[in-house]
Image 1: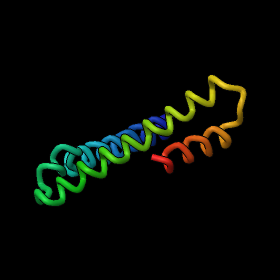
Image 2: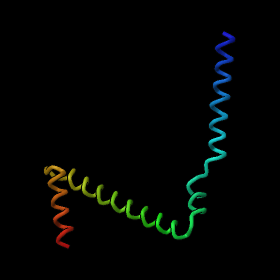
Image 3: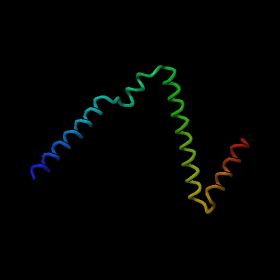
Length: 86
């Protein structure tokens, strides 16, 4: 029983130390953004906005597909045709 307790204490200490070391050494996202060069920060924000817009378009497509009886690929083709005509 004493050996199991020792193993549990050592394991908890090692895992806890690793987690604390990770939290102390790895910067958060805001710190990384602050350290970026202004040009890279601008590019990062542009890419983030573009990805958010793509995700929103995909969610709109899925909502439209859920409201109809058509398969999603037919709705996607219709939407592509609409965007190509614009």
